[in-house]
Image 1: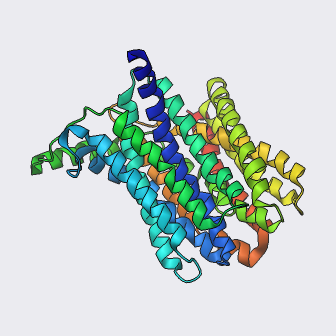
Image 2 (image 1 turned 135 degrees about the vertical axis):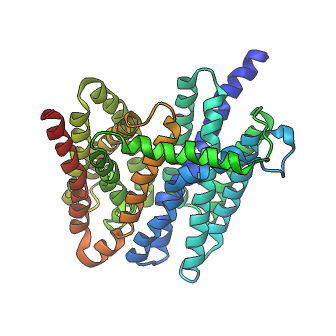
Image 3 (image 1 turned 180 degrees about the horizontal axis):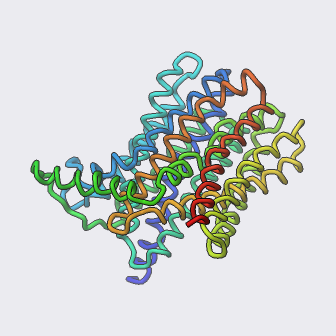
Length: 411
């Protein structure tokens, strides 16, 4: 019985945390765009709606709050991180239900506020989930693998699952079903998870000053001391911008070309998930075999070129789209791993988590804000120009990678 309980805690809990994170992310990132499109919202507004994801970019600002404050609405022995997780998952579920109750044609700005609020609460949830996951298991790799599996499962359900359900149900019912999936996650936290992190909310001015110096000033200074940091900053700022730009309008492009929501959910999203995982393994192989500048260049050039493949699509040919999607998803998986690896290599070992959070924020702020122009480009210049521009967004990063190569070679 004890063995069963241990297996349950070290597998079900991290899976649940990853699942709850993935469920809300893709709902906000892609499914909501289809929801707006089907309610006759203009492509320009849908593109501007990409701003709803910006709270994810400021995780480094919110993390000290989540890590230092205990929510007093729960008993003290409930645990600091578990209290944040239960509270945020409950709020996310309620906000998702609210999204389904809003009429986008009449209450578009209220919908934007609710979507951005959902992303903000989801960011707080992810901070608590990451801290809990790291402390949960002595076998970190095992826990991380289960967490990633849960995250991918959440992505598939809120993406492909939602598209399939829309063949039989209304949008309101789909939002309600997605929200209801948080119930078993909350029960897992309450009845299975354990959290021994108990803290008091008592702070002094000196404590705050010491924290600010250690977590902000020292972190920024450590990055500025890196050789040719401006090149690394440019690489990070524009790395994967082309993919984010594509993702902001991808499903709408498929619908306009005549693909059904069932095809998007059953074939395209499933293929993307499988080959994205394959791309992650391929990216790890490239990192192990090539120098930094080489695997960065391979990943970014691949991301740019694969976006141009969508110019070949003129009608709803599922076979052509599937083949293109295999290549694009693989390249995306490679870029994800390469980006994480490169940012990790820049982090000071004294405070790796804070360094990585800051670098991630720099990257995502650029990506999400540039993506807000996607609807304007499609509306005024068409889909072909959209894919060309999305590909060209990789140029600043490629130039910075080549400049770094030249700099390293001349030393």
